[in-house]
Image 1 (cartoon, one colour):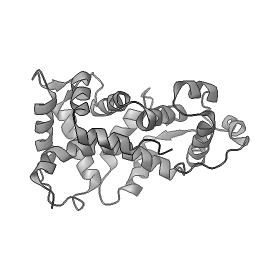
Image 2 (cartoon, one colour; image 1 turned 135 degrees about the horizontal axis):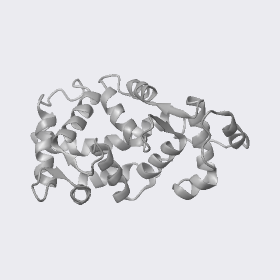
Image 3 (cartoon, helix red, strand yellow; image 1 turned 60 degrees about the vertical axis):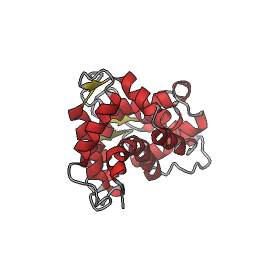
Length: 233
């Protein structure tokens, strides 16, 4: 049975871990967890899609992936997304397949907006690569900055209680009440209160990126969870 301590603290760790876990689900769908040999056709095929990605050399310089890894990432991306971009509905369909026990629609919406860095309504290969580069191979501070951006729904540089509650409810809905039946209905709201007591250092009602990163770095569970996903590809 889950403990009361898990109810107050566990959702915070889940909130961080599920961001990276969700990106691995996307990799699994694209068949990219296990790399296979690449072919010279990959770069030639880039010219046939509607959205042509930037030169691999530029992406290699900007990301933490090698040229070979980028070729294989692109092959999988192209196979699932022939147009070269992913829209929000496709994103939602992907996560509904992996979280059938719950409703992942809202969380997929928030995650899509985090990957859609230029906010044009679609996730390009470049968006996809840069997000994965941070989540899978970035420093702890880079990963936490990316997580902060997800929680900062309106992108004003602060996390409010309302934004955190929206994210927590989305995670709870996605995981499914049947998965954690002992969690109370108001568990997400209780978590948000605990979250702000811990992170809102100056008690001004919002959490800045510095407060967020500092608090997460002091949390052993979050730090261990970050290490679990290193070198998966």
